Image (cartoon, rainbow, N blue to C red; front, side, top):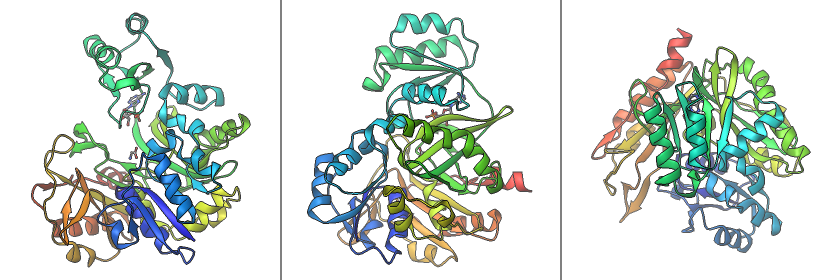
Amino acid sequence: MNILVVGSGGREHALAWKLRQSPHTSQLFIAPGNGGTASLGTNVPIADTDIVGLAHFAQAHDIGLVVVGPEAPLVGGLADALAAKGIPCFGPRAWPAQLEGSKAFAKERMRAAGIPTAAFQVFEDLATARHSLRQAPLPIVLKADGLAAGKGVVVAHSLAEADAALEAMMVAKAFGRAGERVVMEEALEGEEVSLLALCDGERVAVLPSAQDHKRVGDGDTGPNTGGMGAYSPAPILPDDEAQAVAEQVIVPMVRHLSALGHPFVGVLYAGLMMTAHGPMVLEYNVRFGDPETQPLMLRLESDLVELLLACCQGRLDPATVRFSPEPSCCVVLAAAGYPGAYRKGMPITGLDEAAAVPETMVFHAGTAIQDGQLVTSGGRVLGVTARGRDLVEARERAYTAARAISFDGCFFRTDIAAKGIRRTA
Ligand code: AMP
Ligand code: GLY
């Protein structure tokens, strides 16, 4: 079967790598792909937001499965466009994708489905928002309603900070139309963890937990990024508890959407805070996480094509989802300046040495091939991912491989998985 992967990051390289291993895969296309996916299949120069172009390509190339990495095309209706052509798409249609596309929508669905989440209010005008803010306890969380690339959330510790955030979202329109509505919610405390599940519209197969590292600096300092590393499983949510947590935060949402006539096909990703009162949902994503997917794919033992196709065809059997018990760890190598402005086009060396470290895969994110040379083309450049008998060995291998690689201005966090290791020690 011909397969099309949509996206260009480390997540998509990891998915393409696993899809390539399946005997079901004939031609593999990645749109637009990166320097790593180019060695697994054919990169196609179509933007991941070009829904008409992607649907047209899928039809013209006899694609039997489209696997969508990022959220924007899902929110924009790629799954709907493919369904109209009878092409199986792993990823939800636009309506259920609003779980990620609109924070107000997600909160309202959570309330309706009885899912534990922070108390909230939704505002569409500044005066009402400012008024309610003055009755609310601090700290308070303000979220631009729409997609804001992970930047539309402010945890405000003072009224001045909260007012400034409201102004930025609703008046200065720092996030464009995403800020026309704002969700104000209670601040929660606890450790964050990602729980992802494959869904076929009715059934749910929970994957092992993973933990992302969103801040740019060691010790969770500095600005937020797309994610500087991840590991799986996260000891804060061990395998023998993941199913029970999914019964609280994922299964009721899948049932609720199905009852509304909008079955959810794809990955439902719950961003959780493990609070003193139990797990609470901070947000949903409607796709695989980046970088969580890199350590998850390194542990996955089942045939990914079979699993994703079973989801598209409404016949997912959770018993067929098998993972290696060995933990894995992904360290992101980024370009100096990231998440702010950074340079591109720096030559990358040392990949062969890195790949020689046992049980290690270097997934590409922001890379491209220029005149036969691998160069950087993004802020997050590579996701060096390794497996080991335990988290300590997985982390050691990932850092050994990471240190073998160089490009001008390369940096990485040195404490990926440290929290998990402390918890198991
Ligand atoms: P979100 O995009 O909704 O996941 O928010 C981004 C980040 O903001 C989360 O990863 C948390 O670190 C933080 N955050 C979001 N909601 C809350 C909340 N209710 N309480 C405390 N921190 C939050
Ligand atoms: N790792 C966070 C995300 O994929 O949204």
